Length: 112
Length: 115
Image 1: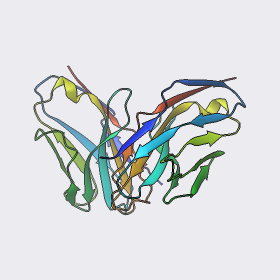
Image 2 (image 1 turned 120 degrees about the vertical axis):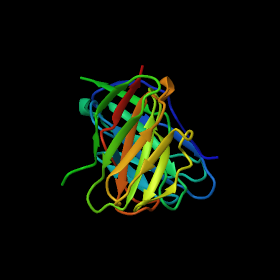
Image 3 (image 1 turned 90 degrees about the horizontal axis):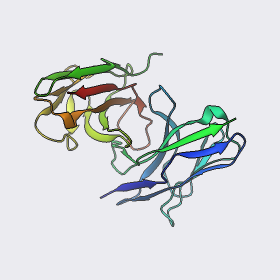
């Protein structure tokens, strides 16, 4: 079956530091890949997505590239802010109708 | 516009009781999904509706769980004979159409606690 593995948190870093959250997957077929974010006290919201190999998703300074050869979709941001403190979820779907499978989430804490 | 709303935001019940959780999707969204999120875990798929019909209920854990969407808009997740293990945050999401590349918009969730 399909699965998503992401690095365990919490990840603690200082403002303006570089952030990487690793995400790897196993899937049958060709999945679409997503990063969702959950800010404190808020619901899940889509951060970025990529639907085919070598696509790069980007939003709010975050980027992730769909790497089929390494089955990865690592999330990066060059300079984090305190407001980026949240839980980040990597997810995939292989179903034509969009059923999502999530990783366990990675908590990121950015300190001033 | 209004996002996905879920009621109640919190529900405390006793073991063995029946509960209903409601989801109001974004107007015009034909696809609706229910997920369950246990503490420290990512959401897990429960059921998906396309219009009024449950197109995939493979994630429902057992026959105590049931969901409906009678008019193709609001959906209700029903749990009979609740157990302590049902305690979790129940999330609803909707999308304009059911497709792998479509964005799903999530509600704030209903936090269910079974005592």
